[in-house]
Structure formats: C-alpha cells, structure tokens
Amino acid sequence: MGLLRSRRDGAARVTYFELFFDLVFVYAVTQLSHRLLKDLTVTGAAETLLLLLAVWWAWMYTSWTTNWFNPDHPAVRLVLIAAMLSGLLMSAALPEAFGNRGLWFAGGYVAIQVGRTAFATVATWRHELGPNFQRIMAWETTAGVLWLAGAFGDHGARPALWLLALGLEYVAPWVGYRFPGLGRSTTAHWTIDGSHMAERCQLFVIIALGESLLVTGSTFAGQKDMGAGAVTAFAVAFLGSVAMWWIYFDRSAEAAATRIANADDPGRLGRSAYTFSHVPLVAGIIVTAVADELVVAHPGGHMTGGTATVVLGGPALFVAGHALFKRAVFGHFTAARVLALGTLAVLAPVSMLLSPLVLAFLTLAVLGALAGWEVLGRRARTPVVAEETA
Image 1 (cartoon, rainbow, N blue to C red):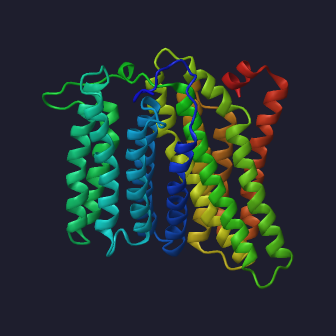
Image 2: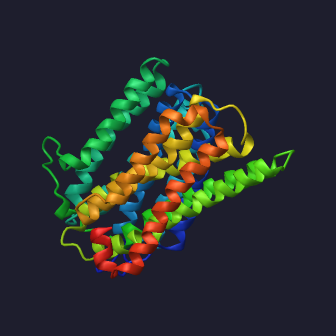
C-alpha cells in the first residue's frame, strides 16, 4: 500500500476514513450556527464568518491532502487522527474563540494546518509534489505565527491579527504560494483527482444541510405549543432544505464533477469552483439553519432586523455561492440565479412589515422556483446543453 494514491484518472473514491474524519466538522458546523444564533449582531456575524472561513480552510486543505495521499495508509491515518483531535479542540472552542478560549481555537487550528502540511512536506521531499508542499508550509507557518499571536494578544488586537492571518492563507493559492527562495506553483502542478475533489465538497454540503435539518427537528420538538403556526414553520424550514439540496444536486453537482474530472487543468477548477466558490454556498446553508430555528421557535413573533437578515441572507448567500460555482465551472452566470437574487433583494425593504413565517414562506417560494427551473431545464434539454444554458 503506497503512501500516495497510485491513480489520478478519476478512479479515486472517498474512503470510509475520510467520512469518519468529517464527523469532527459536523460538530464544527453545529457550533458555528449556535454561535451566530446567540450573537445575532454585526460583530457576532463578522466573528462567526471569520471562524467559518478558518474551519472551511482546515477541512478543505485536508481534502486536498487526501486527494494526493492514501487515507488507508497507516501513516496517513495517524496524521488524520491527530487532525481530528485538534479539530475537536478547535470546534469546542468556537463559541468563546474571541473570549477566553482563543488559544484553544488557534492552537487547534494551527496544529491541523502546520502539522498536516509538515507531514506532506517530509513525505514528498524528493517527489514532484515536494516543492508545492514546501511553499505551502512556508505560508502556513507564517500564518500560524499570526494566529497564535492573536490568541495571546488582547481582545482588541486578536481580530486584526486573525484577519491578517486568514487573509494570507486565502491569498496564497491565487499567487501560487510564491515565497522567497522557493519559487511559485501553478495550478498545473496541482494534479488532483477531480472527481474525488467534487465528491468531497458534495459531502460537506450534505453535512451543512444535515445541520439545517437537525436544527429544524430539535427546535420543533422543543415547542410547547405545536399549533398551526409552528407546524407550518416546521414544514417551510424542511422544504427550504429540500429546495437547496435540489438546486445543488439535481443537475449541477454531477455535471460539474464530470467537467472537473475531464478538465485539462483540474487544479484550476479545484481552486476556483470548489475551494473558493463553495464558501458562500456553505455559509448560506448555515445562516439558513439559524433562520429556521428562529422562525420555527417564533413563527408569528415580532420581526427583528437580525431575523430578517438571516431569513433573507441565508438563501441569498446560498444562491450567490451556487451562481459563482456554476460560473467557475461552466463559464457564465445563469439568468435564473440572478433573478432569484433580485427577488430576494426586493423583499428586503418590506421584510420588517411581515411576520417571520410569511417572510420564510416567500424565501421558500424563491428557492422552490429555482429548484423547479432545474427540473424544467432537465426535461427540456439534454444534460450538457442544460448546464451550459440554464
């Protein structure tokens, strides 16, 4: 059994151990949604976004690594187990990451990023992938210093240092991890298995949707009065999750997986379509889960600015992320998604005049219409033509 995956022809599949690794991030997604719910302010949203970007980066970089390395090799499994332990510590600290548990969060995050990359760097030192991992190691170490400095700094310096660290990490792939003395990588050097990358991201979307369903069910179960309003809100929340699944998985997920699997430069699509474009898409599902909890708990309650923002903002982020995803894969924006975003924007000025349930129903109508467009597109066109024109 080799340390690296032996085939790069689209035959690599997601292993059971990778699915086991993902369980840590089920917990992380739950922590993020609960954190946002408890601090539904501009500051709370900004902090939760920063933490989400870090959690996504830790998971995504591990997915890139297991795209190259064989997760069934004992050494790779040990590295993933260590990353899981660090990830649990990081996830447990998420609610108080900007408070008393900043070091736990930053320490867990840096341990995942630097530890995993150090292993890959040593393992590929004389391999063609070696220079790429050496450059990544240089960037991760630099960012890691800033993460830890922020954890030790006061509450005023922490957000600035962590934002700088995160900015460095997100800029790095776009500049090819250029580093003094180490040169620069190109996407052609990232010889990934495209189908494996697509499947990994599809599974993370399932994780996020699972959190949305979990929130819907647990909130409804905790209701003392399961009247018509609560039952209707429960159904609207459930159908909203179904609509998001339909929009993502009915046509575009499979077609995009085929496109990246057959691409001349799968590394470019892996970076733009999956590593970056999925960020707003996943964020939208998490924000929608927060909205579902608020609406199911108080379907006819007084509308607040925070409730209106998450009820409209979650679907808007999801649709925008999916539009960017399709743009990266197929080369253009789709009219249906632009229209959906426009409709959600039109609802914003009148949202404060509506009840949470009515506003949630209207956003469901937008998502349902977009899902219906996917069904009509599939029936009216061949799969290839549909993806290029929908």
